[in-house]
Image 1 (cartoon, rainbow, N blue to C red):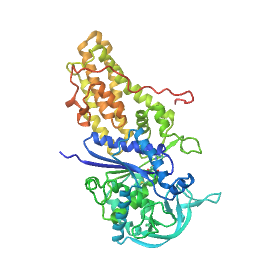
Image 2 (image 1 turned 120 degrees about the vertical axis):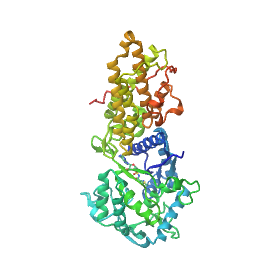
Image 3 (image 1 turned 90 degrees about the vertical axis):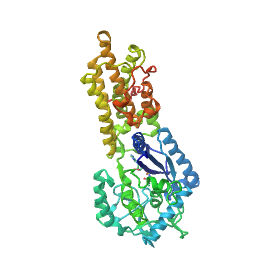
Image 4 (image 1 turned 180 degrees about the horizontal axis):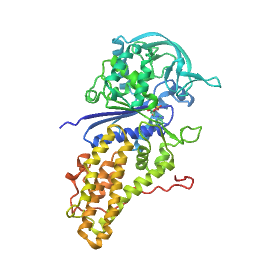
Length: 521
Ligand code: MSP
């Protein structure tokens, strides 16, 4: 049976500086989704990478005394390492300086040109190097220090006047509005969609898509002084990575259009206005969904070096461990909204849910089985209603509820469902008190411990996208075969076999000890 396909991408990161927590957050979100879909029976392609061209990278490289390529190589390697450190399972890490990518940019350019959508003119207007974006006067304000900045992003703009190729974006105003209308799921969350629709409704202006004042970019075909606007280059990564235009391996045919472009809220416009317009022009299918996640903040403020409130991906891993860091980031912030994080908040979350709730449940159950059931899965007696209720809650019902949240990329709510099951199991163990049954009713004790081991197995399976190593350690402890860990094994049909020998239990989720300077809420 062929599996359904699922293609997920992150934004590709600029290489003007090392990775920060925003990058890690997005990579983890996409990885959690990719892992979930794999476990749920999909043939997944997961893409991430770096966006290496543009004036900003060229300038930064020069200030560091490096060529743009040397500088890009250096920073790209830090992003690759970050993915490795976070246990991110991308199928490809694309770099826009790769030759195949440049060829793909030229191919899409030619398709847009053949469609009659590209013409040569002169650009005169405001440009933000930080955002790599052109802005209209209405989007700008002048600061008291005389600097002209974008009202929303706060980044400085400079006047640019040069010969430029233009894309006839104005001709796509109605086509895009029709597309949004026909595909309401294309832009999510819904409030972002409303923002985009109102922006497009004002009418779109043609877009300058080439530059001549610097040369760190992809050359425009047959126009030697022009390099492509970095967003034409960057957006094309989503198709160049999977083989557009030659499609030698058939991956483009297989995976395009993408199922989700996962990006931050600041770049929704590029992905939901420019990108679909370019694709319409090149007569290529449009991605199914663009999901704009929120920004991570500390104490309500943007993380910034000058405010001294930067939490780095490395510091999180060092403090909590990668598994716990992944869990806490996905749990603490509602995906799609901005979210406040701090070491205290994340640490509290880890202790409450991983250490005290799930870790404790596994530890209590497995140590009693080790002691009282000769270290093997106990033989249950006749199940009572309470047993059935808990098993049902931890079986298909949990998977269905979690899957529904994943469909909406609501990772925190998905985890809420899992936490509820672990809560119910902890209440059950307290109410059933197998440590007392040990003295009064061994058969009932065996039943209770069996039910709990089965709940732990299901929890281990469902936790894999978030805490892959720890979840697999849990599954090792209930002796689940390596090929019996995907979601088709959740529920009663694949329940643990009584009598199966179990290894000695080990804690999987240690408590986080808050350092003295962290006040717990
Ligand atoms: N290179 C462009 C994207 C091109 S995609 C075809 C870019 N790069 S970036 O390095 O600035 O940002 C990469 C991703 O990280 C974006 O999705 C961005 O929204 C996200 N984040 C940057 N800062 C963030 C936070 N503080 N919090 C969460 N995500 C943030 O934009």
